[in-house]
Length: 464
Image 1 (cartoon, rainbow, N blue to C red):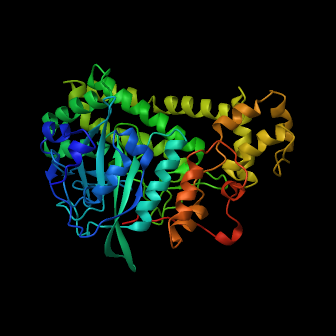
Image 2: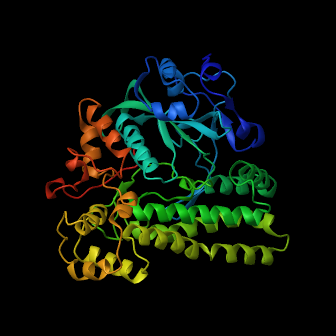
């Protein structure tokens, strides 16, 4: 039995105490020689742990030992995957170890990915490979630095095993933290398997944990809708594509979770898709603001009995709330775009995006080029001259633009380069750059540049 709980973290297990029926107690698979590949020192300290002491607990971070005072569980949830309903999904290769309570009283799940088969495995081996787990670490840290609510990797632990995919790959376990892993799919599972009583317990728990100021169940739903509108707007503002916006991948808290086939867009195109399994472009960049309310409608369906005893009144209340999603999203997104361009004019924003698409300009770097042009330090990209002269009449502030427009994002070619390297030096270097995305630094020009044509079309995978 590990002493991690006493020496490092203050653990709690409120999910287990209060939500019986939504989990199965389980133990991670044995890992004979776990080896720490990455430890997120900054996050460890934020959680109240001593990073150096934590390095001695690779077995716990791999899931083969449970900290004292915890009850690891595989969480149950359902979900619509690419629009098709699956009534029983759950943590097929993951475990909720417990909830870490930091010195300020903040509560976050410590969750493992790749820790072995569970009763929800559905034929999978329950394992994960090193590459996708390191990729989740990189993307999560980048999103955090960009100010986007996100789960974060605490550690990646090599298992010493080979994971059979198309070819044998080195195995790993990801230890990550999130505000919680309660999903739209969690509510769907509760409604299907426990009915209104279990949904009510789950809603009460979610309100207490995430939205304690929500005085009614409808107010709770309103808060979730608003949180998702804000989150998707933040994704769109930085060119992020989640890639698999199934209802089981949408967190009630409003955090980004379950990084799989995600990527950042280079040339601006709303139809951009990277996921190898998104054949119809359901989760394309430009579709994300439309998929979110579709998912939220599925959440509303589970909550209707809590909104009103009269079913017609409940549906009317839910519909009115959900119909405000576009208003919320547009408010967040347009405010963000006006800030990125330092203008008060929405018409200039729309024209700018049209030009970006027509001239296949890089989404991220063009904003920084504009601010540099205002300072006389750069030439304009092709096609922007007439628009830029009109834009300059509004006296945009280049310094303010640089504070919100990143120069460094996890460019797809750089992430792949780091993951393919024989050691972790390139990966650590990339993460160091991404942790200060707005600060231009000499010698890092290659981290700001899009891939050249030789990189070719990019495709991502779920990492299973």
